[in-house]
Length: 556
Image 1 (cartoon, helix red, strand yellow):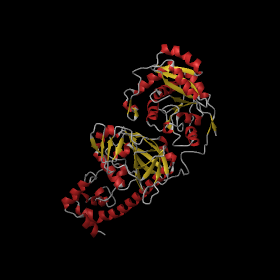
Image 2: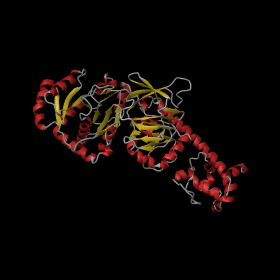
Image 3: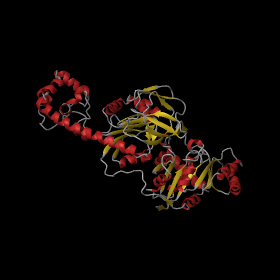
Image 4: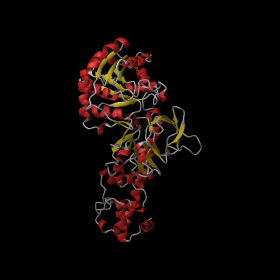
């Protein structure tokens, strides 16, 4: 299928040249002119798409040629794209690809795949005629003739007016404008890249100011003409992220940790889960005291738990519930920051240690350096008795973290692009936890199989609920009202006391709660006025000297 999609790639010779600032400034300027935009990020980075969405409200996707092949990448770019202008922010330097010595999966590789023109952002600070040599070098490697213009960053108007004609004469490329350094227009960085948009004060005002500035110093009409001159893009409309599946998948409810501590998610991952039948409901491990009601799966994404470790450790209520849910068999996924959260403790950059959920019998700690950085292919182990998981096969991802663990697991093998291998992950029939950020569309079976486990868990939970209902009805009629005065006037079929409804809870067995309660959001016994806490039931038992075990044995 052919589709007309005006598009442009914003790249640079290296990281730190100002790609993100120039990209969001241009997006803001075109948006202010009424252009409908679609934003994309080359590579696996999470943060730049967050800027695109937070500042401009623009849907942003990752395009990564390590994760997906060229045909699938074109489809991801084009399948639901109806914008007047697609802007693709590059990664690192234009030609920097896999392993740093290959063009594969680089910004230039993506530009060739999408047949997209490239604009180079050059940090001109401290440079003069050397700018010509730098630009000529990049043009010399441009075998497809994709570089259509340059923007000079960190340069004064007076010097720009002098150097512009020199560059155009000697390099034969358009100098589309400049972006002067302004201290009040700056995006700060830290160990995992740029600060998050929510952490930068007055970020929207700063972005608006940057958009207004670039509209005065860069030729927007020239950029638009370059983008509109892009050839029609050929893509396979039958290729999609979904794989071979049915849209009539059974529905399951999956709780996804999403707040300031856990914010790294690929939109295509969530989209794929939804296609296979997931209803995504977000919760905050830092703020919420309990998990969402009636859930069938848990996902903990990456982020910065180290900066919110104290807050996370103080929220003991939700950590206890998470431990209980996972111990009871709820399917779960955790990666990087989410993986750290499942440990016993987290020691941050300051050397302070904080209690985490304790699901994993290990501790995570700051190393001061990148650990196992880069692209990986995660593969099932073939040795007998190893790699037990809901997923068998391989899936692509990457690692980018300064923390390590005393218990990284060994369920899978991670293979780097350098062919180096190492053990990775803690896995079982219903969970996978590791430092790796996975890209589900690289093998849709990963998402499909996880949803299947969530559905099995849901069915088992429903069956158990019915069994508990039948048993508890008998318990309610034959025993409870004889011993507890507060139950005397309760109608026979009115199960509004959770203690009567689920005596198994008092025995320490798994109980997800009375569905009548969870559906209505009720967390206390209406008649007894007891909160739904085991210690309160223990008090009832102690006070009345009842033996639940005796009751259960005599009521059979």
